[in-house]
Image (cartoon, rainbow, N blue to C red):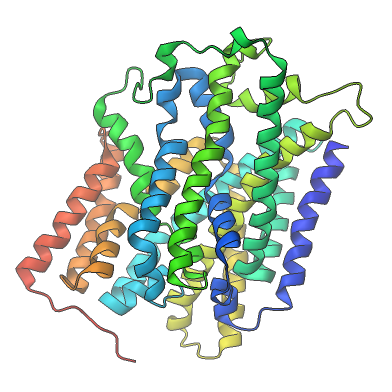
Length: 463
């Protein structure tokens, strides 16, 4: 029953893509859903995109092992980032009239910076997509008769299919469904736990409730763990694509703020489970990341029910929803950048229908690469961390100066992008404590010093 339910659920997402594809008539329809998303749909798609497998499995496991302090970045860091994105960036991005983040680079700094930005942006979505596809395979293989590779293949075919057909609107609709399933599944599990256990089992040791207690980690390490989710979110093409797809700037702002607030509210459920698990689980866990599945098996199987596994299936559906909603978003945003800001200009494609076909082909290409990453990668956590920080340190100052200032130009933007990537890479090679934070600082300095020395005039693309 579990295997059949999961297959039917995945096929439903594919059918939504087929249905939406009939309404897609232009590149703008495909990339930003014709700028048609209202507040409710935009809020749910922002929440669902960010609420991935690591938000459920990873956060609960970290808290189970180390206490509340281990959960800082997720959900607290990402929630703060989404809210700040709404407060300070969303309106400016929407008012720019962009289709992708690459359009900002082209308008403000020229085609050279646009191409360089694309090269730095693309690996992140692909790697993150691969991590999520692999997470899907591990979850599905653990609760069904499918092996990991077969489950990964099933996920890849379905997500590539409905994303390629329906574009962002299909992604937003499936995100809406997946978001509701996530909220219901996690909520039901928490209610069953609280309803079943004795009151004394709900008491948590005070030392496990310290938010900024990171065990043996240093203050700098704690700062770095917050810097990666917050600053990388500001330049995340998955989020920006949804902001650009809303009906107006006010909806863009409110959807990001509400999405971040919902992320915090729902993200506290896995955190709470991680805190309670040592007291309520019947046996200790060897693998901390199995907290949520273990709690589901203990509290959501009801032998006396006609369908004893029905609520358990809903919880597994919640985890799968978290994964699928992230994969479709990263594939589409990456493909949009690849097509709109690289291939279209490189091959001088003017026809709107051909541009849309180019974007669809890009979805397939990036989807296959992500599938291969997921198929052959060993560790999901490392893939997620690399995807979040790769290349984005240099993007942070370039986006901020590009949106809010005319200070600097093409060479200062290029310097920031190159120095940011080099700084992050060197930080990893030499195992520095805070490579990402350091990269943001030196890339910002590179931008400011280059712009000041050269006295650059901002490039404005002619119509």
